[in-house]
Length: 239
Image 1 (cartoon, rainbow, N blue to C red):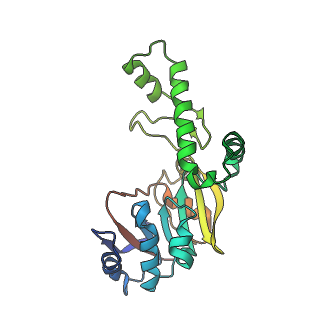
Image 2: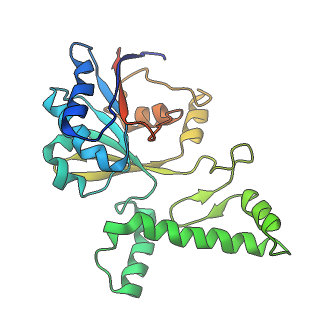
Image 3: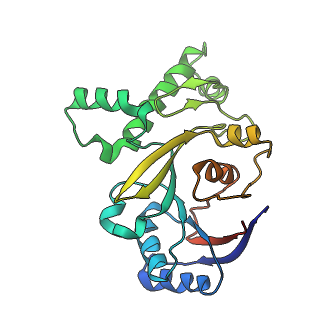
């Protein structure tokens, strides 16, 4: 994979400290430069903490960042990168946050922001589908949902991929943790960025992948995180 090489992999069956620590022993002497997590949200803090205890201080990449991770993992989060579809620091969500706080007098909306945004956007998606069908029968509505194109939602513009029935090239937020907080770096569109670079959505790690976000976003293009398993993949990066 260009200048990247898998040097260690590990899985753990139970989300307890001893199982996680045991799995991370495969990092010893591996020469790993970066760690990609494939873990459920409730395991993130424990895995990051145990990775640092195992003397891995390189970049860690994962998904489902939330601010409460600092309470659980503390300084272990420093130098980690996260991909998330919704983040309170994203300027695109500023109007939604303001409207939500005004409507519900809820200053703590950021704690449950993803759920609020997804619920709002789901209703908007359904309303759009109803507006494009002359029948309220299930099959007609299903067809309308699957034929959604360029629907502007709060957190992204939605186009449904007819091959997978999933969202096509939906934007994500890139978060970097430093100085005790998660910092919004940018929004990016994985397939668009890859196509623009001419890689056809193939992984690219030619240069300083984890110090410049533009390289990280290219790498994410074909990154498939299987959260049904609890594990990680470690890579070395040749400069």
